[in-house]
Structures are given as C-alpha cells and as structure tokens.
Image (cartoon, rainbow, N blue to C red):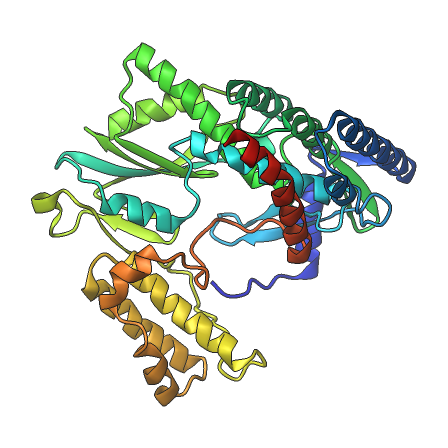
Amino acid sequence: MGTADADKKDVISECTRQLEDIKTYLELTEDMVKNIIMEVQNKLKRIVESHMYKGNCTKKEADFLLSKIYIFDIPHFYIIWKILKNPIVGRPIVAGYNWLLTPASIFVGYYLKEFYSKFKNILTDSLSLVKLLAEMKFDKDSFLFTVDFKNLYSNISVKDALELMRRLFFKYQNVIPNAHLILELMELVLSSAIMKFQKKFFKQILGIVMGTNLAPILANIYMAMLEEELMIICINKNVKWPILFKRFIDDGFGIMNGNKKGVQLWIKEFNNLRENIFIDKMSFGNHVAYMDLYIFKGNKFYETGKLSIKVYQKPENRYMYIPYKSAHPRHTIKNYVLGELKRYVRINTEELNFLKIKNNFFLRMRNRGFMKKVLVRWFSEVRYSHRAKLLDVNPEDTCYFQGTRETLVDSTLIKIGEGIIGEALVPNTRGAA
C-alpha cells in the first residue's frame, strides 16, 4: 500500500479519543500501575512454582516464563491508520513486545495452536484456500460471499473466551499435557492488559488486547467455537449452512447454494450468538475479493465447476516496493522480487492472469529504479510451468496474506520459547506413542 503519513496532532487526537472510551479503557494512576505490576509478578511466580511442583512445568519452561519478570517495559498504545475507512480511524495496538507477560503470551499461544486441527473452518493463510479450492467443484447455482466482523478483538468478552477455552480443554483432554497451567496463564495475560500513552496509564477492561501474541490465535479458536454453536442452531431452525465457509480471524469467505437471502439469514443467526460479536460487512455474487485473492467464476466454471483465482490488489495500492538503490543486501532485494513472482504463480489459476500481473510488476520495479537487464534475468527464473512444484513446496521465502501483524515481539524470544516448549513435548509424544 505504501506509507501512511499523518500529522502528529491527528495521531494524538485519535489515540486520545479511543482511550477516553470508558467502556473499554480505565485510566490508572502511577500508584495503581505499580500495584497491578506487583500483583501480576506475584501471581506469575505462584502459578509457575505451583505447576513446577505438580510436574506440569519444566525448569527451562519456568525460566522462560519468568525471564522478564523484573526487566520489562510497560506496553505502549499506538494506532495504525485504517485508510480505507470513511472517516479514517485508527486500529488500536498495544506494543507488548517487552512486557513481563510476553513470554507467558508466547507460551499460551504455542499450545493453543494445537487445537487448530479440531476446527475445519479456521484458515491459516490465503494460500491454503487456493489449494483447497483447487480440489473442489461447485454447482452452477452456487454463489460466493465474504463477511467481516466489526472490531472483533475489542468486542470479545474475556470472561466468555475463558469459559469457552475451559470447555475446549475438557472436550479434548489429550491435546495438550498442561491444560490447567495454560488456562491460568491465559487468564493472567488477558486480565492484565495495562498500557501507557504519553504520560498516562490505562487498563483495557473490555475485549482482548490487540498486540499480545496469543490474541489472534485465541480469537481464531473463539470464533470457531461460536461457529459450532451456530451450526447446531441452524440445524434446529432449518437455516441453510454454506457449502464451504473458511475464516481468517475476522474475515470470512463462503460459498452458498441459492440466493443472497440465504446468506443474510445465516448472518442474522450469527449476529444473535453474542451481544458484541456481529458481522457488519458482506459481499455476495459471482466474484469476491478476499484477503489477497480475487475469487470468481471463470470461463471454465460452467464446464468444470471449479472456481478461478487471481491476485487481488487494492485500488489504493501505491506499490512502494523497496527501491533498487536501497542499502539492503543485494540477495535480499532479489529474494523479495522472486518471492513476489512465486506468489503470483501460486495464486493465479490461469496463466494469462499471471502474465498480466507479471508485466505490471516489471513496470512497477522499473519505477522503483531497477535496471531492465537485472529484472529480465531475475524474472526468467520464475515460470508458470513451475506452478505444481511451487504449490507443493512450503513457501518460506514468500509472504502470503496472513492478516494484520499485531505483535512486534523479538523473533529470538519466540524461537527460544518454541525450542523450550518443543523439548518439553518430546517426552509426552513418546509416551503417547
């Protein structure tokens, strides 16, 4: 999209406007903050020591969980402008990358992901949807739709989320070995969302704080559990269920037989599940834009029943790619160009659409100062004939749409945590085998 530049006064004004919402945020004095921090430190130590004694937490895991208990920064509040909104507003983010509960959030998020496989509606990225649709055929009278949930994170009740997680852990008792530890840490992380803005301190009292590592994972699972509730209601009320429904956190894609009224009725039942969770946007028809995909009924649909997909780029995109004269290492520059080309190959189901966007990308790179001879050489390395092979390979070098990146945690800290957790899981895996 390019950079979004704003006057400092506008940023401060928007942050202040949001923090003055007394339903969501509670202003704290400095003494109140000190007391909360002391309470969180004591609770965290008690939880870790108790579960170490019970054998639910290894020494390495305990060291990791307590690694920031005394050396930390209070998360700061900031916004990312939603430039497509009218009027333009800010997305609230709490940068908790060096908070005393950051290791606990990483720890809980790691284990929560183990439950993803229990829900068929969860989408991990746009490429997985491309692969799924390639294997499916649909009737001629089927239609596509997308839905968007309004302010999902800030509208999820922490109390409700914790209750649903307890039910989930009870239902699948063999998925993770330390369910009680995870629940206690989760409750501590979610109930201790303090932040600072300029010289003031606040606590989020409604919703899940956007910026902690477990937030997108918890939101995904929470919504998946609501969808299970919805399916039972739809069966009892004889409300039509989509042929296919996939959701990445707050963005859903579905296919429904019939007409728009069927989708609207389904949405109405969804919006009745919880007071604060509701769909406020919907698109419906023979073609929809979803994440970085444009999904449509192509020329072959009425013969094969298979949908076509091409890369979707928003009209507001300014294509502000890293310029050729950037100080980045040359191999980094080359790899992001090749990575983008490979993404185009994987997403586009028709070669003609790949060639069109490839040519546009070439011109955009020229506008960013890339030499023609360099681009010709690099572009020749990626061909559409490689598509089947590229789809089979895990695209580690390519950035697919995975939603807003709300966390800025040091990648080293995450790797350390995952390594420690992985070591702890090995004995349990062997025992299960």
